[in-house]
Image (tube, rainbow, N blue to C red):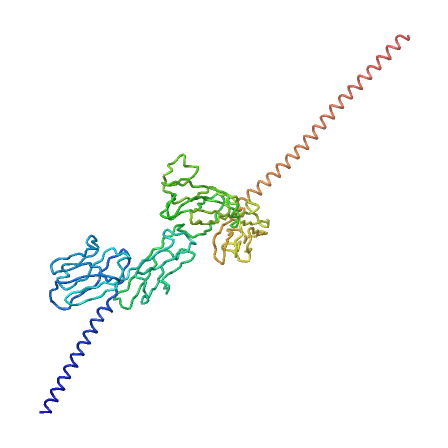
Amino acid sequence: MDKMQSLEGGSTSRSAVSCLLGLLIFAAAMLSAVFGGKVVLGKEGHNIFLPCLQNGNVKVTDLKWVKIGNSQDTHFLTWDGNQILRGAKVVSDPRFTLESRNANNGNFSMIMNSLSTSDAGDYKCTFSNQAQIVHLYVFQLHASPGNPLLFSESLNLTLKTHPSENSNLKVTWKGPKNQTFNNVSQTLQIVNLSDEHKEEWRCRIHHDQSTQDLEIMHTVQKIGFPVNSFSRKFSKINETVVIPCKLSFEIKSKIENIQVQAAGVYKSSKQEDVGLKQQIKYVNISDNGSCWQEECGHKSSLLHMKDFSVTLTSVQFSDAGWYTCLVEFNRGNIQTEFQLLIVRVSAKPQALITINSPVNLTCEVSASLHNSVVRWTHVNGSSANSKEGKNTTLLTLTLRVNASHFGLWRCSISVDGQVLFSMDQELEEIPDHVNLWFWAAVGAGTFAILILTICTVICIARDRRRRRAQRMVRLRKQLYEQKTCQCKMRLHTAYYQS
């Protein structure tokens, strides 16, 4: 009997222990549900849902969504099994709702539209003596300054978290080329914006208790020139050259949050001559558009000008230099530079060339370039006839022409081993038939000169003989007259004497 009682006592003790363990497990589960909860990450302005799911098929008629506050909870929604009832403070806010069809199936997740930072906090879903806690974090990605941005500006991307307690958050930044930046301070600074910084930047947010990471994107929009900030062009004399000044935006007095103050094209002889720039063209800017200053009286001033490139016709050596397309804003300036280099080649003498005649081939560049080589080469000829000069603007090749020198000569300009421009000069030999006619003409000319000389000598001699004969006739006549006169005088004297 005593043994029976002891067995019964042991059984009772084991039952009590089992009940106690069950209560502890249930309490732990409840504590985990209340104080652990789920984490939802959302972006300001986006839509999310706060999860609340029922286990089982029991019809729920007492569902309630509340926001946990410091002093008191705020009632959001109630589900009585048939309809949704709103709390007093959100009765006029349609952003919070439930899906009736989902609620009938045990999904009581609350939909939140157009999140704001004030929505962040802890929410509690209660039904049938159960409670589920959801922690909502709302994030803002703030960019300073805002779009559009100028090249060389610095951009600060700051992730703001609501509520600010974010010890369990891990933030990863990714650039447009998928490069990764780990930043604990939740602020990323991009210094000296360039082409590689434009397009999308992504901020990825991870929380250990969240089932899904949040990714917030920010697109960097630059305002400027779509081409490189510097370009170079070679040209021959009398060609047409376009100075490119094409923008990625229309010029008007205000572009979103940035003010446009001036725009124009300027020229200087050297890149460093900032203060000696000559204004080539200037853009008049209004609220509605822009126009060239000298054309505003002839055309409408409401043009949507994006391209204010300048066309130079029949360029000469004086047109060479540095051209700057400049747009001035209230936050800074953007500009693109263009170097125009004029090249000319010549051969002296310029006429057809004969064997053994001296020839000077000249290649002239308007400006010297760093690490540049100017080279004369005989196309399809011997490399022994070539000549080159480094970092020079004038290269002259002197030849004593032989049969191998005729043909095409090329002046090429290369920088860092890459040929950027070339011009050709032809050396032409006097053809054989031209030589034949030339010597025939020389012979005929010589013969004609000889004949002319002989004829001239003969004519002069004949003229001299004729003049001599005429002079002799005159002398004879004079002598005859003198003799006759003397005879008459003598007769007359003798007559009177007698």
